[in-house]
Length: 140
Image (cartoon, rainbow, N blue to C red; front, side):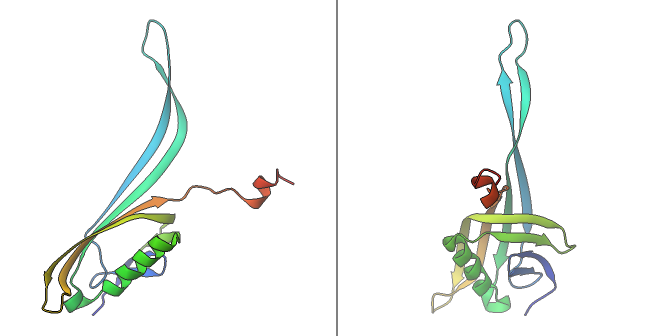
């Protein structure tokens, strides 16, 4: 059983039923350099963003709605070092992300050992602008 697509991580589609999510969190980390000052508070100078992290939590009920195969696909992309594009239902593109971690909590196993419930947390980190071949060659 599957429902409407709500978000995509590369080719992996989050749906209302099956491989879905319960929550999405974002964290932006920016850097400020502290400059020593005599007789007053130290000055701060913004040096730019450092990283952006997205956390996706969800619960699969694989026996009723499926989704376990999709989670395995995300795991394979993570272990292969493949960056994935994150896109929302409304078409907002969040950019390419690297899977930093995948945590699972499998419970309610049947007699074959298959879980009836699998809660998961995906931690993604947005890729910054990489070095191009042109910049490596000194801007030829």
